[in-house]
Image 1 (cartoon, rainbow, N blue to C red):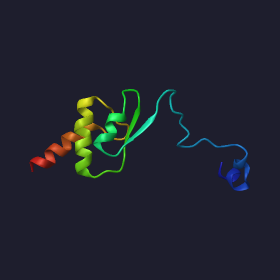
Image 2: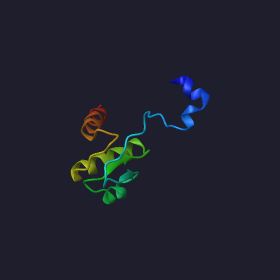
Image 3: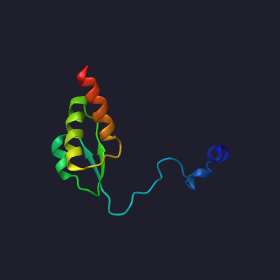
Image 4: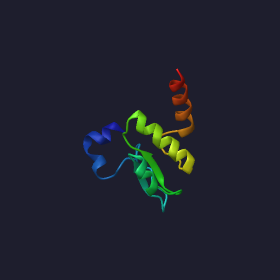
Length: 89
């Protein structure tokens, strides 16, 4: 497969690799950077937690758990469980 890429064959036909997955119809991506952004998220949306610090992430996770929002890139239950252990020490 690599020989075709070197010859320039790949310019005419795209070779499927990681990242070519399609989104389902009707879903929109919502990035969360603070607790105010959680108000814009709805049940059917794909919610992604942006680059935030640990304190903000903990706050967002608690609030999202109570609202029933599921994140794509973080497991809220697991995160809250490990952070709860760290705070008690």
